[in-house]
Length: 282
Image 1: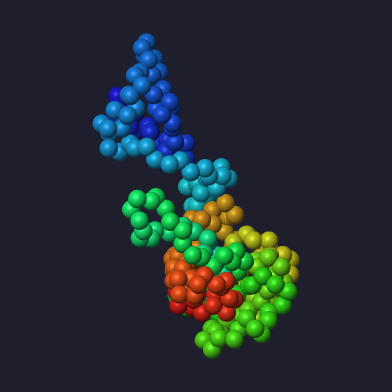
Image 2: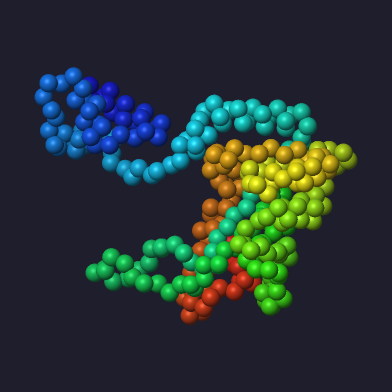
């Protein structure tokens, strides 16, 4: 009986319908004339190493449905049919946008007084948002990133350091991309930086962000033989190549770099030019 309960609990958990302690009691309580004891669940866990008390993280039902086996298979079937028909591997590109704050906004593990549970750490109290647009090909090549700062226009005072990387820099009201920036990236960065051989088509894998789905953006892509495949808006956390393979470790390394800078720079606000310099070293 307990083997069946263990199997049921693990299967329910894999379907994003993890049961609570009361629910697990009900699994064996069905049809039994006598209620189970208060410590039955704890003993069940002790006897079955595959069952444990873990944190249940809320997750939007749309994301659960969007990552079903059928949905993922449908996406890859379509992607493979397009790639085999039109596209060479070297002409397959993935674009993604990553954002972070200029300062440090996350807790970290540090050494300190063992009698205390936590300690204060100096941090550049700068919550201004900055975004970066990256594109990488299936064979490992990349083009110049675009960095988006919050502001009206780029200022010369932001780029006084000698080792500022040769990237594209622009601004928006909130530090995120916009319809204008998406078109600018397409014409000034992507198209000239990914020229194929002859009349070959290019494939662009991208998220379903509103700025990528405008009539102007899609029309200009088709005019320049760029075939767009949009990742499902509810499945980018499992389908977006750049987010899964590159951006997570880069953001972690960036936070570490900024934290080190705070220790030697009296936690002064992080200047915009330091963002690019530190991101380059990640």
